[in-house]
Length: 277
Ligand SMILES: NC(=O)c1ccc[n+]([C@@H]2O[C@H](COP(=O)([O-])OP(=O)(O)OC[C@H]3O[C@@H](n4cnc5c(N)ncnc54)[C@H](OP(=O)(O)O)[C@@H]3O)[C@@H](O)[C@H]2O)c1
Image (cartoon, rainbow, N blue to C red; front, side):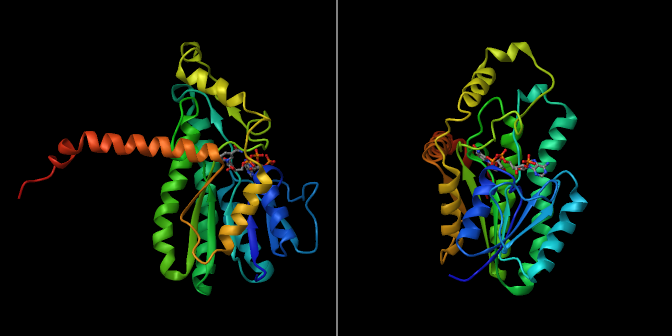
């Protein structure tokens, strides 16, 4: 296995930390980012570099990617991992909360990959992995803006996969289900400042309660997710999509089945919308 240079955002905890540890243990070089540029506990070694990246500083993000590239003269694998969830009904979210959710989950990953692509195209190789969520494929009530941000990331990654393939660049959307990280903790998860009592007893409130009840008992193991990501990076033909965790598979399949059912049921109406000539 060739030693690769990995650039991973958000290695301070959770999936990013597990991925950085796994890539280092496999002999790769890792450039990880944390907000303060300090390595978290449990991440060290001569093949590790840590750079400071705050995802809301979009100009800074591009500079960090170029700084990372300069360290070894190449970036083989770029992982957009840093992200967070905003929960609360769509109606309750403020313009500022919505903007921040999209800045961190969409515009920052976009800034990372736009800065990385010229370097990868010049070498004719590379692999970009964007960590989305099963929520992008099967959005639930109560976290619609998080789902929308991850759907945006999913869609642009699908397009990018087709655009970048001719240049020898692989592109994968990774869509985890619930993983046992700090994602649902008060540190990471944000709630809309405004609350609307009418939603609390409805589908939105119930979904939020069910989501938060999973904190600490999520079925997904971050170390196993990291090993799965390493495996696809080493594959001859990496996938465009990787679901992680059995719950993600069940939820995505249910949504796609429903999509197929709607498409079949309304097929005549769908086809009738074309000109007849
Ligand atoms: N765990 C799950 O159930 C799950 C499911 C689907 C998708 N995901 C996705 O997986 C990715 C990793 O999440 P996780 O589960 O590992 O959650 P986590 O434990 O909360 O870790 C999130 C990481 O993102 C970083 N981050 C968040 N906002 C940032 C910002 N503004 N600037 C720079 N870094 C920022 C955090 O840094 P700090 O430590 O400084 O906050 C941390 O390193 C996220 O994109 C998340 O949406 C997670």
